[in-house]
Length: 244
Image 1: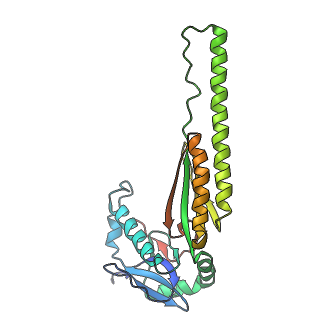
Image 2: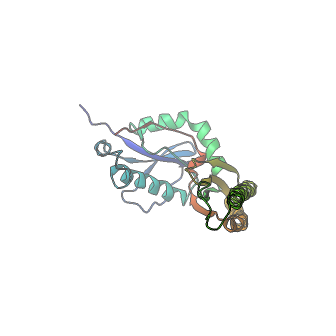
Image 3: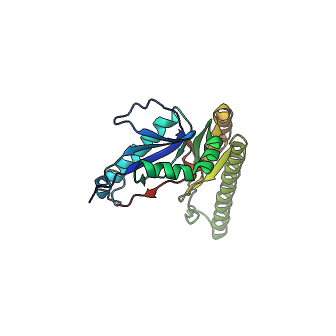
């Protein structure tokens, strides 16, 4: 029984060579003006995956390799990052799949060319409404008044933070070609990815800093991350996801 010839697929990009400072270097399989970046992968590598050890195990190692290849290509050409774990059964299959996805991939690649992804996150932890004010020396009426004032202050702070976060998002969207909201864990008010044209990044960040000051003044933590390849703005898939 022959051993499967698996190719790990990283991204779709332009069909032109780029010098990637990586060992072993991935290669490009081209179809017309598009290409898919691939590398040979042994099926046994996926046998070592432990989904219960996502930080230090084989899964994390493969994910870091995938991201490193996508970033290396992205330094030279626009990319459509493919889903981590995408594998293809040989070069002929890669060509067929690229041919099938050509129209969609070409359109998506044109849309993200000249753009980079930036992430913005706003966190705010408000005081617990159940905490009680110090009752020492207070009458019952005074205690209730103080508690109402505390609850009112918490509500006002919440409204201030939500209002400032909304103004930040509205301002950033004016400088972005697109935005995608991500999952928001407890305490996270904003967790959004923005696709920004490189020529508008300075204005995007100036707007971010302006509204970030307002958010910090009302007790929020504000941060930005990037630039990234447009992971959040592509949905082209090739091949199948490898299973551990």
